[in-house]
Length: 272
Ligand code: BTN
Image 1 (spheres, rainbow, N blue to C red):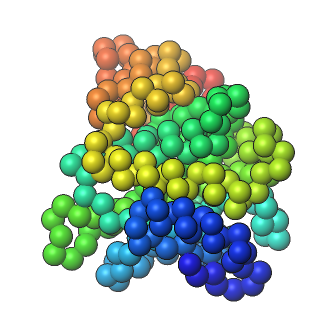
Image 2: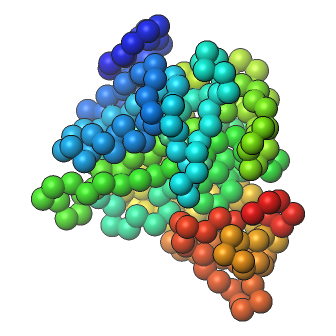
């Protein structure tokens, strides 16, 4: 475990480090006060040949990134370190099939944060955590090839969560935050609740793929049965997921499987 820079919460990180190392032998935990983006930091390391299993938490990101090239904004006030949780897990991985990984990650995070289902935490395909059509957090997965490896890649799984209340200014989707149902929630508390299970889920995924997780996604599917608009102009009604995690949408052309990571999907009535 390493903790760089000011006020690093070393003692609080120790039990999380131990739980992580049980879930993935050799996985280390790093905490930094500020980075541009935890995803970018781990991708840079991978491209420089460092494929070590690591979980990097940042108290602040100066250039957080979301899907489709969007920006990921964390806490509005840089001094409010309790307002959000931003971290990335980097792992060498060789699943037989990569499809559905972000969905399996989402299921794990949702279940950890809402174990009894009371919060109604849902998953909005492919990678958003929603509560009542409000966005609690998002997942950004990137991979890097490794020298002399055909199957093995380095996967970087980045997760951003709103912990404290945040204004809706400039957000495409109105925000939700964890303290709406866990009044005492903190970033490290949330990390402790979700990270070991998340890493265990990724190990399980590498072995068994998305199929065993599919019913758990379906139980939290925010789009099931809803009319949606796609950013490429198509529209239709969602009918769950295909075997590889693709979104099934009944359009005027018939049942279409949406798998492109470049397409954004919104329930009808919400801005695309
Ligand atoms: C999305 O909703 O489009 C995905 C958001 C992912 C944000 C997290 S925050 C930690 C990690 N570092 C980044 O730059 N992005 C991810």
